[in-house]
Amino acid sequence: MARAHCCRHPPVGKPRTLVAAIAYGELSRAPYAITRLLKPRLDAGQIAEWINDPKLASRQAAYTLLLGIVGGPDTAVALEQQIDAAMKARDATNLSAMLAADLELRGPTRVDWIEQTYFADHQRTLPEIQAALLALSVHGGAEGTVPRRRVVEAYLYFIKARKPMAGFVAMELADWEAWDATADYLAIIRSKSVRDPAELFAILSYLKLSPLTTAQTASLPSTDQQE
Image (tube, rainbow, N blue to C red; front, side, top):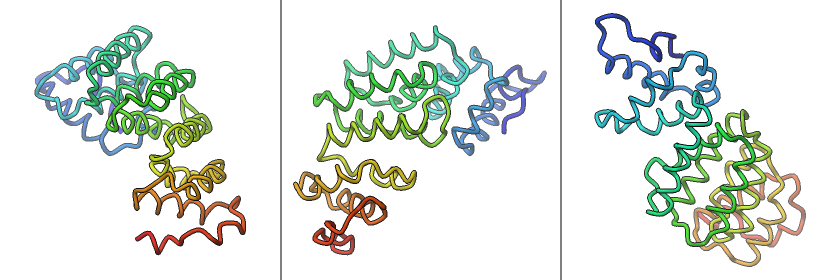
């Protein structure tokens, strides 16, 4: 975990780029739930400098997540302006990190907006949808500002709104033992809404694990047949 001086003021004589490298190295190895514990040690101004430094462009996503943890209302407004601009340009660059940071700042109520903006709007591109799912996944794994239960609800909304892509979230739901999607997945398999073999495998694997799956699934194809 990063020490206090890594994210506040660098020691005399030590280049800021080295301090940033140390902080980034520790950040990149830490789960998001652990990263959130760094909040008292983070300096929003310093992180903003790193984000705007072209030499650190490859680290932008990680630093954006940090800014979401330490930022305030002004940070949320700035992030949402960037997200709006990205939407207009259909640009998914750094979008997942911006959405995850915005969720950290705004809380569960912002999930409604993601559902309507990225899942319900069929004009959104695949990279944009994947970015929204990844942002939700970050919070679902952390069980922090946005509870996992709310992320699961968003996934269920996604399954209904995007049936051909429903398998995208199957394995994560299984990992979380969230079996609420069982009925929807059974219906999707029977309707043949999903064509991609990898997605079919994920959905069938979920159904095999679900305690809510009934004897009706005996007629479903086996996961072996999907390999």
